[in-house]
Image (cartoon, rainbow, N blue to C red; front, side, top):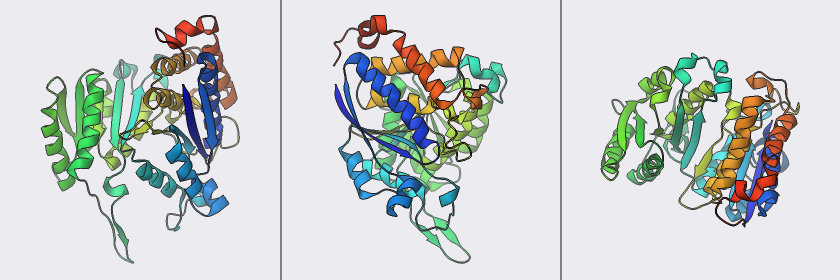
Length: 365
């Protein structure tokens, strides 16, 4: 397998965790004789400082040529003025729109060894395995915006086509899991949510083998904390998904543990940990690289079709989370490089049976 991957390290701890993810991808490539080439480009605050634009033309063109894009994080205090005409997050929103990655997948599992880090009681965390599917290129984030001295508006607009494509993705994913989809909206108040719910109900008829339920977003915020293990696939619109997935991250014990994949209709995807740039620890070598490393696993699975290699990374991370070393956000003292090295060692520990472990019944390459 040959693949060209663009990396967008971005700001804050982004370069540190992206370097760890690339190191893991290079190890996987060497073990299974894949050829991965990497092209580092600018985005976010770093891009503003260098070029004046949060997503330079060269960066976007490189991403559009790539097989997959791996991103670190954008933003920081230096560029945090919400009234500034150019801001780091504009680069990320523009990239999502340009790549057409409308479905943001955020898997959430609670590792038994880390359950004590969650604010919830352990009995609430047993068997938590949720896949959030967040619509990513519509809604209030992309609607028309106005601002005057005494008023402001953010248009929230959805079309049936926008809703349908992300909901079908959620149902398709649900068929490969526990066949239960929860759709989250605010249909008792918002017209966009009423359109969302009616579209979900229509599409559900095409998936008689999948159970569907509807939840209002405010009650869902409570249920995620009181009954998280009852959910399988959760699909929702852009703003609700942003809020709910950050809330759900608390169940796992740290934002630093969780990956994401942003997908469109083709194989190319955008992969990034869900955490931010964490400027308070940037440059200290203490950021947790697990979210970025697991994002690399999603890259292998969804863009390159390398399922066994993805599982190899996930298994290595599971071993490190079980036995350590742990970064300080999850109660340990290890730095970024030490955690990354432990994951690499867990992968390398299978070297004696590398062909069977990585390739299974198929041939490498």
